[in-house]
Image (cartoon, rainbow, N blue to C red; front, side, top):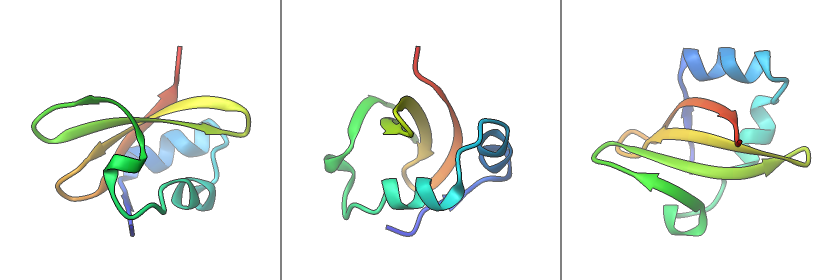
Amino acid sequence: MNIKISEHAAKKMAERNIPEDVVRRAFDAEDWESYDVSEVDETAIIVTKTINEKKWRFVFNWETETLITCYPRR
């Protein structure tokens, strides 16, 4: 999957030292069913992934396959 990364998400990733290439590799699966999906609504999907031994939540617009933001899982 060739995800797009919004400006906001890129800023948050930079603030949290999450390299873009690591995120792209983490989301290289063919379909959304392979992800640990915690919430879904009409346009957004929240996916939990472990990167650098920390759990992160990534919010995607699943229609456009765009990463909207990311934050540490609490």
